[in-house]
Length: 339
Image (cartoon, rainbow, N blue to C red; front, side):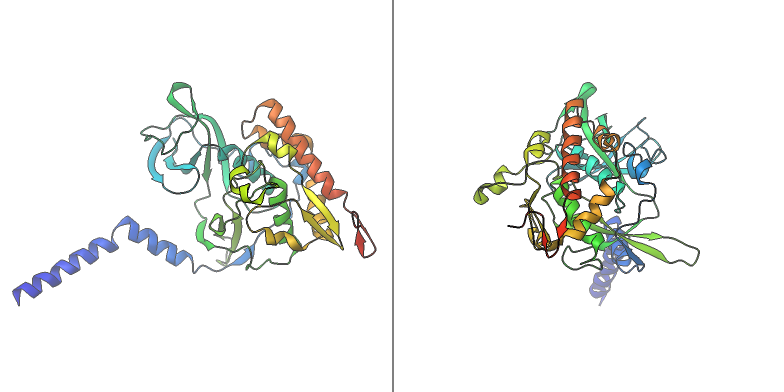
């Protein structure tokens, strides 16, 4: 009997220790957050589009990180890039992404945000010093003073709560011009890594009545601005790349326009999403993109610390793609390019 009592007491102690652990608390919080309800939002009309600051991006001046001190907190395992959880001089927490994807993602977020899509907040630091940083699990570019080159810092306002993931094929927006426009944007950016684990929903409280929004975001855009079109399908996984301005500038964009549908040269993941892009969908997103000046587009790449010649090349390439979309027109049941 005494032995059984000791066993029960030990089980209670283990259970109490488990539920008080940070891991359990985080798991419980994520479970609770997945039940949050609100109005689904993918896109909002950017009334200030011609004036949007694509250098500072969605976070503006007010959310810029305090770089007086960056402290390592923990490592995030998995994925292509090295990612660390860090804290800045003001105590704000950030996810630092090191490596080849950082520049591409910083610019891609700004272009999506510019035309009204929901995005997280990010900034690129050309040379970041991280106190207590471990040795990265893979080789990354370094800079002076034993710093890390071109580090993307990502954060979100404190009131945002994770509310799960969303699917490219099943979501509240399928078939709408806003969703089709997002798909076109993935082709314009050459973002070939359309994994659903990269799609997050965030609950954002708003209004005095306690109701809020469920904002749908593509939260990993690092596999952008490289080569997507590969004529040898068996070598696609080897020859595709990311953050390569020269390859991006050479990659074709629109393949053809037939029977009111626009077909892209995109050969990345989820390529079936591109089978039903109507001319009207393409022209709708083009009408927004066309309002961006070359200065704004260039600022998105300057914010990502591309070299001046790369900024020019990428700006010209994006403008060329916007023009391709804008020049699509229909003539009766057939579209330009129909044979």
